[in-house]
Length: 115
Image (cartoon, rainbow, N blue to C red; front, top):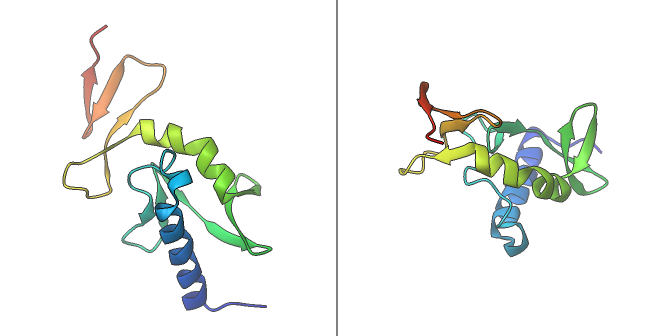
């Protein structure tokens, strides 16, 4: 059965809102998780594609799909650590921490970390 764009958008909105309210997911979700201004879904520094597979929410990843709940638990903590949210809750990253390096880029400027 083929769904209209409005039905798909409503389904994605439902998944986003349900996940945000799920206490079991709260420790995993990046602070900016939700719809962006273009209608996509932001998950930390990623834009993800949510799809329905056999009535389960899944995320397109590489050449396949992963259940959304598994995706959140596997990548949520990492995305949370990479993302620093602006105090005015704009849901836009203001700093990206590069792992394995002794520096942080804040608003495009390099800031060396003290040892």
